[in-house]
Amino acid sequence: MLKILTVDLEVGALIGIIIGVLVVGLLVGFFGARWFFKRQLQKNPPINENMIRAMFMQMGRKPSESQVRAVMNSMKRNAK
Image 1 (tube, rainbow, N blue to C red):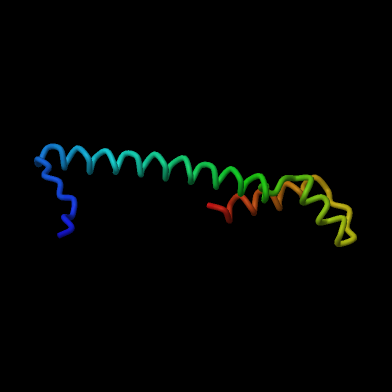
Image 2: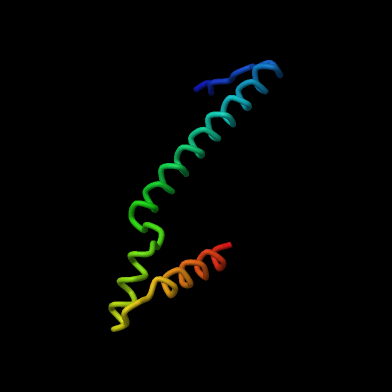
């Protein structure tokens, strides 16, 4: 007969293993999410004033500084 591996663990050892696995999972999740977030920010940087100026120029308008600031402020308000 093929005997299946059986492990007899005490309660303290079992709790220690569960806590260890949770800590490792939290660390891997944290650093994985951090890496993913940094990668997304590199691929899609947040909009800055130069991008707004370029958008106005593509629409055929010469933006004034107050228009650029107004668009930036409205985007900051909407992001919250």
